[in-house]
Image (tube, rainbow over all chains, first blue to last red; front, top):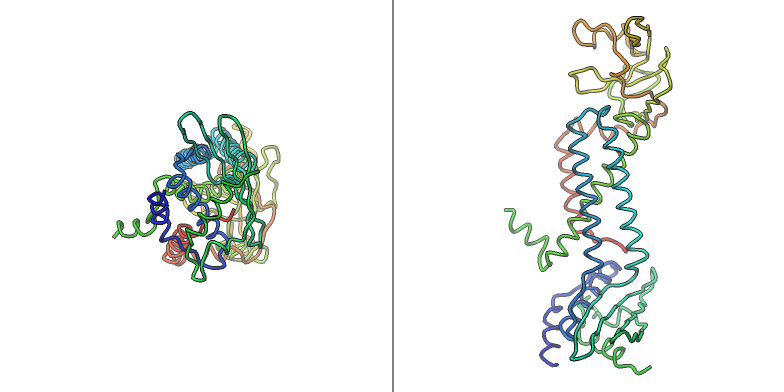
Length: 184
Length: 182
């Protein structure tokens, strides 16, 4: 365990935020959660949300690129039809992307799986943070052989960063560990 | 020179994170472009927003005015309409008023003559050599509305191209460092 912890500490030792930057904090925590669950708890990250996002996004970009090239080479009068199709397709794909992030991914920041002897485990970690609030709600959904347990923790972002904005990995690990081992 | 820059921009990032970052930039660029194309399709005009570059339509329009164009399929052109047209082989579109229209009985096409309100003579001098009229197909759109002064930004950009590249460069670099708000 000590070795795994050190691997985690090492992987986030350069993690530093600009103070007062909300976005920075979110990115840092997201990064740390990924490192924590893969390095310490041995989950393999499941990139399903990222895959969908990249697939829809790059498909839309390719359509836009092709449409721009085509409309550059063809007079407007002759390319209206194809342009109408590609513009509609583009906005449909972007709409799907927005809906996917809003309704499927939601606040999830980490999805992972692992096989422990006979138990097949999967985990979903989501973060909720109200605007202008330093408090964050961490929800962990653990699925062991289709038995789902939910755990959650409400804490200030400030408890995981020091005064210079450095991420304090040991404090974070302690909090998450406590949540995971909490008896319902 | 490029390698250290790339290392700096993408330091410590996985290929997946880089793919996400590049995609964010693509989405900004393509959504602007596709919105422009959507506007072109809706207004049926190749270039639905143009900037006035000359004083030839004063006092109606001044240099730097932003004009909104449409080209409705059914609506005919009438004398007095202000239109934007582009002469074959010339790059810059011209905003002038329709002075005369006459229908050719043989081919059924409208032959149109234009003039700038502030010019002393009609536009035949601006047309190609031996061209007396413009046709419907030369017209990009009818002016339906305008906003004063805003177009000056683009006039300054086209007068000083270096400024344009500088602005583009700064914006691109900012996009790399800016993280997306969620």
